[in-house]
Image (tube, rainbow over all chains, first blue to last red):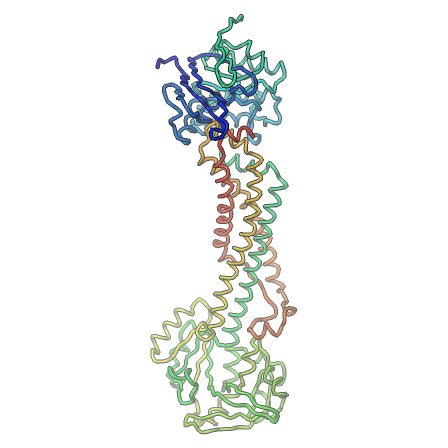
Length: 234
Length: 403
């Protein structure tokens, strides 16, 4: 495996109701993602996008196949090892903003670094940098309830990046955002991808996201239907 | 960060948390008040036993207590002077004891005739203060006796009633003497009132034919704390005499004190166990409401031990937040009633007396029990937190995130 490969998934399948009528949520999928990719996983509802993201993110285990992240087969890790792996190597952005309501924006981002035992000085510097990147320096001490949906999702992106992950998985990140907020969020993710070479893989229905993606993988009935690299104009 | 999150989490639903905190405060208030009431009752009972009944220490001939035979006398008072002069000893009195039959025109009763030195006796047992009728051996009555109210009621005796006491001397000869009731006393111990009859020692000693002799030395110390040391000193000085502490002389009181302590702790434990269900319910509700959030924390990389610690900390805070209030309210209440007393005469005065309890109880704050109370509360919190915390751990991030 070369240094560029971030995700290398082979023959992965996820079957529900295996004992009665088996339903293949993900069916024998191969997926290879290199560092710095900005990839959209698209497909109709029930096509297996979220399941595939969960499998790649180590939130769920496949019934068959292997998933290597930077050369480590995460399907062989124990639950405790998987938690530690997610903390160190994967950033998550969920569809509904999923910030901890009792923590401020700053504390939400800081939590991940606390879990990683990052020293306070380093934490503060990283928070400053991340909030600058998401353009929310003035909202450090705001609770999630005091932020708009778009602002909350930007904080969620900052949190996903706090641990300096190998890649970020985003499950329909713009689904609950208005056009302007979605556009702002995509600008930030796009810039982080291009300037800091951070790998993004997001599932989406959103045409705005699909248009910004440099690679689009279409899933249908748990299988990869197409894998294209549309031409982009900047 | 975990502690900060836990503290803020309990305030997400302030009404629910305040209800639980209030129940814990109330439960503690109830538990500590019971402890305080028991402590006050027991302390009062112990004081009565020491100051009005048996003193701190009593000394007898080693065989006297077996069947109260008149022949088993103490060494002379001069020989026992060494005990009187011990620094911890406050007062001493000597008694001559004789099991006797007290008869009147209307009936008879088995009693213990106690020959006493009236002056010494009032300093040791405060007998004069228990008098409710008559005089304390100060009149000119021939062969005066003091009898308890309970005995007077039973035998329908009044002041100046004539009674005949019959007992045996050291040679087992029957002796009888006609006496007059010079006074009627009433103490907090009805059974004792019914069987004790006091008479000046020179009269009974004369009847027994053993002037200056005594069967019992009753000793009052300056402080309760010096009891053990003084007891050991006395044992060393007079190894052949039977030297007993108040706990040996009134074992039922010593047992009662022990049992009351155990009971009060059991009562607090039961109260806290009942509260534990409320805490468990609240925490389970909190977890149910936050299933998705907990799943998200696990997805982000929060280890199971940290999730466990988070839930346990929340339970601990929820429980301990009510603790100072319960403590404060119980302390305030107990301090107030310690000053004014609680009149328990409504709860069957006679029954209280038959067990030797005063009808007015002065509760005392059980400071020496606080460590145990804190341990019970913390254990309750930890036990209550265990089930919700395990429930949270059983969540799978992928399932929790779907909720």
